[in-house]
Length: 238
Image 1 (cartoon, rainbow, N blue to C red):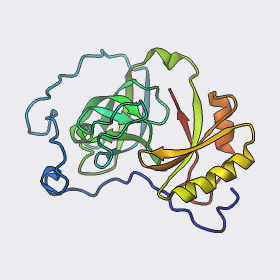
Image 2 (tube, rainbow, N blue to C red; image 1 turned 180 degrees about the horizontal axis):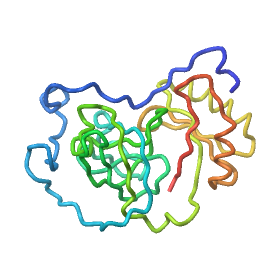
Image 3 (tube, helix red, strand yellow; image 1 turned 60 degrees about the horizontal axis):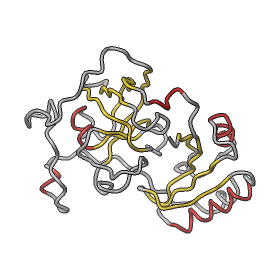
Image 4 (cartoon, rainbow, N blue to C red; image 1 turned 60 degrees about the vertical axis):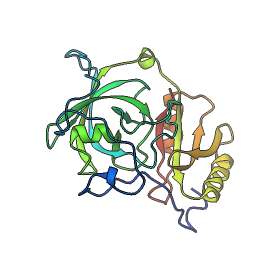
């Protein structure tokens, strides 16, 4: 990628918090209290999880992190405010509204969550849990853990090809995102390159002329930035 060889670009990313030794509700910021979830010694869940049966549509294994403050109450990719106390998660490619069971492979703790956001845009990770879901699965204190993701319920649009794009990075400084946008626009004349403030910084996204998975994959495979944090990620929009 032109321009990346001369100056290292600072990129924002959701980093996993260090293990906590105190209740974050007692620290500065006065974050909203966490709803009780099973297995934490704080009572039963206020919203019992429905029974989705034994059918599993697909399974994925990978590393999961979690995100809470300062993303709480900011709009997620589904257009609604992100609630760190709800049982939700961010995934790059599963359709919005997909219901999955997340199992911590080290502790065998599991929880059922709904996909409501996109991410994580960090190399080597496949899922970002809400704070409540991280506590229910034992990922909260560890920060990052290996998990199994079982799809229990698919949305109506899961069977169709969907709308796809390529996200290149989330930058801490707007000028760096605008610089990358200009580079990508010169390279992909038939694509729509957009830059906008996202939940984790300034995002640069390439929308192929034909927004199916095959064309988006072709674009993603051709991007090789030197900046390790500015990876090209295939992202489903719907």
